[in-house]
Length: 174
Image (cartoon, rainbow, N blue to C red; front, side, top):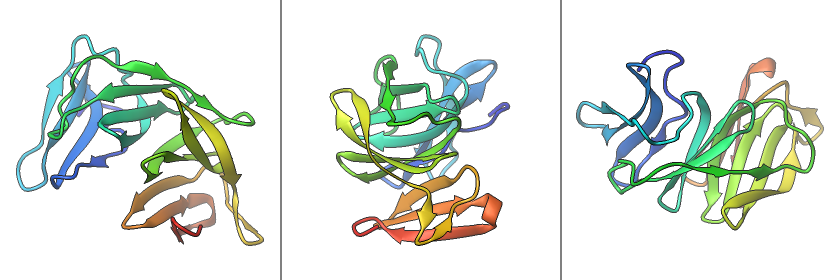
């Protein structure tokens, strides 16, 4: 892909991957099995932003957010290929967020966002997402600036680059 590169990569149930980036100045979806070459396919009329920062697959929809908090959802098939055009989505945060970095799925109805304010938990509110919880510390130890997150196998990984560490939390218990 061209600059700025791929947004956060999403793993598919079939051991494939899905990412959004730019190719020849157009939005492109990169999808395919990890055992073979992953190819980019340009989308002329997708309505997608060229600069998503974070992404998560939620119920057959690729949910993406850019650094400013503008979010979009695109329905995708099991193979990761787009099925239709992107639609706007909103994150209803309880207080302002300056920088959005990444998304992770906690469970089918709960989405987590890595931000400059720490980790924010959202629940579905129709097609949009409403904040239900926010944390920016581990015990009495505060996170640094923006954090990046990823979830896998029941764990949430938090990259706290300002503090030079990666933290791991159980998703079920926090």
